[in-house]
View 1 (cartoon, rainbow over the protein chains, first blue to last red):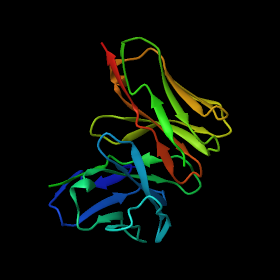
View 2: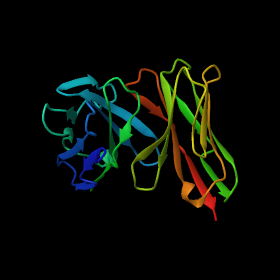
View 3: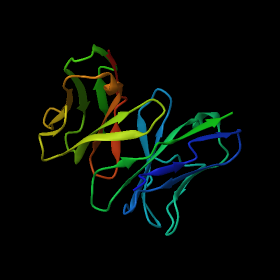
View 4: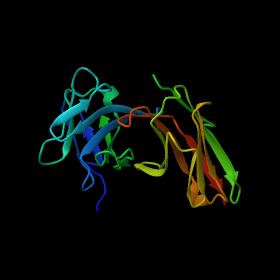
Length: 113
Length: 111
């Protein structure tokens, strides 16, 4: 069991470009969560997804950010027209259905230049 | 909205000491509380999960307690080792779907 896999580990984008972050949950996990960790701040919840459904997106910025978890393939967090303030570590976690315990991936560190 | 505070922000101890990390939260109606470890540039490793009906959990040299009525949890580390050096994060969930994280305690264990 490879755990929660996130890629890329590091991503550099110029202002105005798009960033796509991928997360493959642990085998058997059907719930995916995205968190953002800004420099010197705690992790903040962004979105909770199940296959083909967004369950809770209360932490997602209203513009430029979107997330999906298709029937096949990884969950994708997309950031359009990135700005410097989007520079952060983005973590994905997964859990089995009905279980409260998360397993986190190693994160994607996005740098906007 | 749930607010999670961790004290101290940083802690440095000599190897072998026992230590306590503190976590407080504002809304006592929680579903569970989880302690994580984060190494520099790495992801989070789950240490202990305490359900709202439980008072404590133990794993090896780690013991976590939960007092919902006072909005507090402690993580006790016995006989600290240099390999314990990391940032320790407390996270509280009210629904099981979303965790509120503290900003962590950065622990350094000096050989």
